[in-house]
Image (cartoon, rainbow, N blue to C red):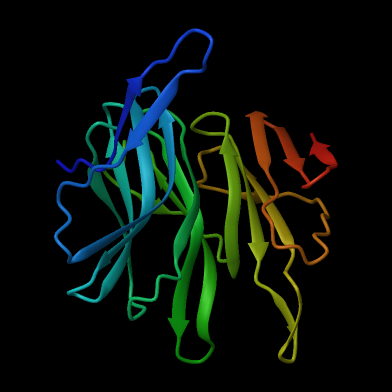
Length: 231
């Protein structure tokens, strides 16, 4: 069992001062061969899942991995997402967010870069989902060239996701990011439905925060000052 993080409150000051916490990071099995790049974490009670990239320097392979804890982060077990990445150790695939919905359900989103002999490197938005506590992870590929930037689930079935398509070019000149795509699901992501909403990002490269408060109840925030779209 791998112990990746240990969070310990060490000191408490007087009542007139706020409690202070010292955060310590412990990695017990690092031997120089592996690099661990953690990108996001989410918890539901004492069950937590972290996600990131795992680099095997000797084998020259990169993997997208999950780490699961059932004791509030004292001990962690690495879980294989089934996504090795052949990129000559170019860490260009990554997670943007993870949500631990409940003890058995979690979902991670981000970007996976694939190499195509004709088109070169292509980005694809990824959604990785577990229904069984991480014993298995399934890819819910929407086949969109872009990046999944934000998502939120109300429960194990109802959720919403924001995906930004790849940048637009005129010839070799960058002219702005692609469309903002919003999808919702009522079956845990086994099926995603496109939302008919036109949000012009004006070329900005940011995430649209999305929120699901129940079946058919969604909010989308346009940063930095709004508006908030609601249904």
